[in-house]
Length: 400
Image 1: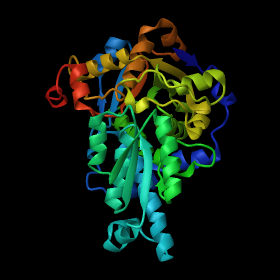
Image 2: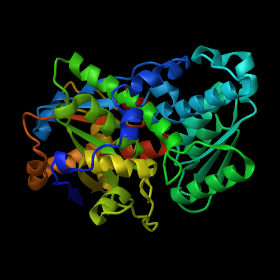
Image 3: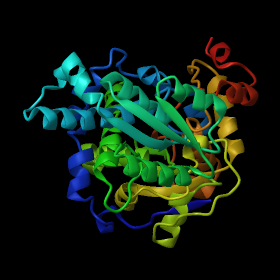
């Protein structure tokens, strides 16, 4: 299913000043000093895929590969960990009654103060792992809540960083409710990547962390000697990632901003259905999707606000489309590089495949030989057994 935003950009609700301040063109400059504290921090690659681009009838195709980000296997390493760092930094300054340089955050004195804190969040896998890793780096405790659909492999990956993992019956949205209840009862800091009325600052910090990858991608595309992308396909759960990347690029590129296509699982297309109805909806739980990182049933308030301005089309794709995209990336033709994409990581390509195969969509989006398309592989094979079952090879073997 698709929903096209036909409203001209000039007639759409403008980006709010607060969202522009958090996610606009200077956002990466605020993030980088914190993430640079992480010894594993490095720029992730943006691959050029000329063979696949030719096959799809577009001019250029780029894939930003977040599978190696900070050793955590997902773009979410940028958001949750960064938000934890910012919140811990504030707590340390309040405790000491003075300003504290970012470089001081890893000192024994700062870590001793951070140890007073506990952070908590709900997750479908990657965000919780990032929050827990950031807490571990800063020296505070972390309690991570996972819903029934989170696999044992993804839960184990979180457990390697978190002090405790709590399983909650129901959906991701149920785990958000439970995490909020428990954290409020016990005085823990909630580090959620979704927002609701009265709770926007921390999700804003999480989203601000994601802008790093967008800035890197634009610089890397320019390094190939090409102009900025004309189209960006962004997968969405609650929409925080899609909103952050779209807001940053719209602010950075101005009149040259690309068209943004938001891709969701057809079993959890909360943004598409909300925009189709014109109001935020909380969908009823349906059959689980293999795109576990995108299985969300209610949009983030901040994402809803941003995407009213930035989104040009919403698109839902079935599980089979994500599987096909994973296989294409694992077994490329010509000189295209191998990309190890998990189920959610391949969703952007699944959306692009659907759009290029449908004449009406292709025309509506203006996809053709002059198009320069950017995708983001948001996660690697975070569930190795699932990846092998879908692709037919272990992730490390596919990468050879």
